[in-house]
Length: 203
Image (tube, rainbow, N blue to C red; front, side, top):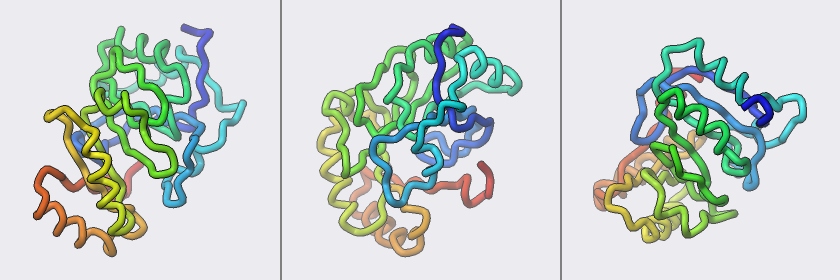
């Protein structure tokens, strides 16, 4: 376990602010490295991989032990750029519920993962195989054209158990939220995801 290291930008215990599990406590592990780099990204500090930020699985696990954690969320950056199996295996040994948030542009090792959220990006679309694995499809909406993109992505989701979310881009939330509300009323298969952690001013 000690030989495996990852570039971790930050890790912290907080509240999940988005998607199906919003409002629930979770421990976040944010990986460095991103292959897409969206203009509106709110975690641009996680894009670059820094040698000094590599830490061992042992150290990651040890930091979680300081809190009353039931759910661990692996996010980024783009966490699936890395072989996550050594970390996930150790987390599962400790009976944590494991969630992952990804663009879906790399293969997803779904073994031991309890919840997979894919947030597709136009610059690099998810691998087709990943649509079969997901529990949650989350599309960031910054303009009306993104609603068409959302429908295109939803066509690939075959599971009726997958939840579909439209999430307003934070910097333009008041510009696009009325359009999203109207769209969801006409297309009730979709739900609205709001970044409540930002509304509550928490990490």
